[in-house]
Image 1 (cartoon, rainbow, N blue to C red):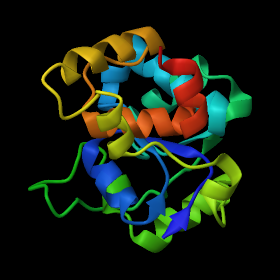
Image 2: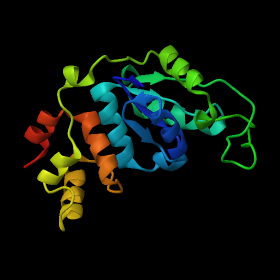
Image 3: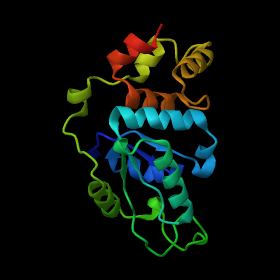
Length: 194
């Protein structure tokens, strides 16, 4: 498994599942065109891009191009890398019919192809991300801070997400991924917690 410095943004949850088996990096999902009207998610992607860089990996069909172009217009180019998957005819195993363009998406690509696309985009492989960034936040940290596992945790998380400009509809795991993409553990404890 490759440890990447940059975070990755993909279109859907199946793309994320596929990539998470290959790379150790924060992976964010646009939920297709849903990202167009979702200001908190766009703000999160901008913050992550500015902090560690962002690799855009969308399908090679028309929808993927539209999403890629929207991200290109919303995030400064110096923070973006673009990983392009090849046009491969076919359909994903979980689908009964191919998509409109008749091409495989990110989830249908071979592991070798995906890794090659990330390498061609210029994604940076890290030897030890903790050595460079410091220790990451953990679920235990969230528990100790009252952000999980307590009766008022949900309200506390929502308050934190609002203060940090993060999307409200995030699971605890998604929140942890976002926080680790933006902050080191020490930065978070110093700057984000009252």
